[in-house]
Image (cartoon, rainbow, N blue to C red; front, side, top):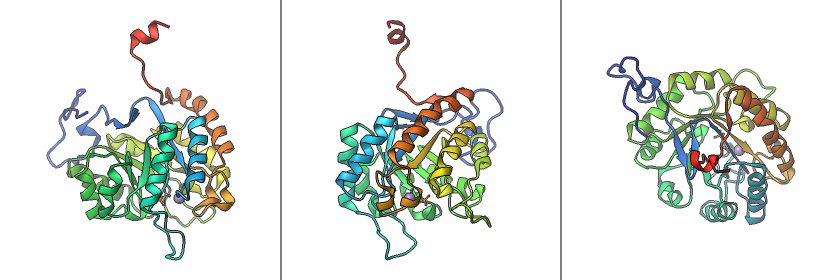
Length: 298
Ligand code: PEP
Ligand code: MN
C-alpha cells in the first residue's frame, strides 16, 4: 500500500511537501473497502438513502442499488441538519438497520460520523467513515480519524477552497491514516439555480495534485434529480474514481433530501449509461479482478 517517495522516477519530494501531494506517491493510493478498491482502474459507485429511516426503506433501497450494480451502500444515521427541528437521523439503532440491510445484499457501508465519540460505535459496522461537508474543518474529528485504520470519505466543505480541502485531508494523513477518499459535493457560489455548484475542475486538479482517490456526489452538488445523471457521467469523463448518489424508493416521502433522491429506476438507468462513458476514458465499473489463469481457463 505504501509507495516509496519519488517512486516511478522523478526527483524525491522536498522536505515540507504535504503528505497528500502526488509527489509522495506518483502511482496513487488505492483504498480498499471490503473487496472493492478505489483509486485503481475500477470506477466505484456508492448509493443509498440520504438517511436510514427504517428497515423496510433501507432494505428496499439496498436491494435495488445492489441489483443495479452499486458497490457500496450509503446511509446516514447521524444527520447534520440545518434546522434543529428536522429529522436528525435514527442514531445508533439506525446503524443496526443499515448493517443488516447491507449484510443481506453483501455490500460494504459508508456512513457519516459527526463527532469523535461516535467512532468506536461506528467502527464495528461501518466500512467507510464519512466526514460531512459541515465538518470538513472539525480538526479534533479529523485528528481522531487519523488514528483509526478505517477508510475516511472526506467531503469538501460548503465554502472550502481547494487548498483548505487538501489540508483537511492532511490532518488525517498526518495522524497515520492514508486511507482517505476525497469527495467533491458542490460548493456554495452566487449561483442559486442549483443547490450547489459542482466544481469538476477541482476533481481533475485533485487527481493531478494528490495521490488520493477522488469521487463526486452529484446529488448534493445539484439538488436536482434531472441533473444527477448528466453530472455523474461528466464526473466519470473528468477522471473521478467513483460516485456517491442518494436513492430512495419513495422520494416524496423521504425524511431527508427527498427532493434530490433518485428512484431505483432512475439509478438503474444511470448505471446502464456509465460503462459507455467510462470506456471512452479507458475505465470500467469496478469488478473483482480474476487471476489471469482463471480468466484463461474460461
Ligand atoms: C449527506 O451525504 O447526506 C450529506 C449530509 O452530505 P454533505 O455533508 O455533503 O452535505
Ligand atoms: Mn443528503
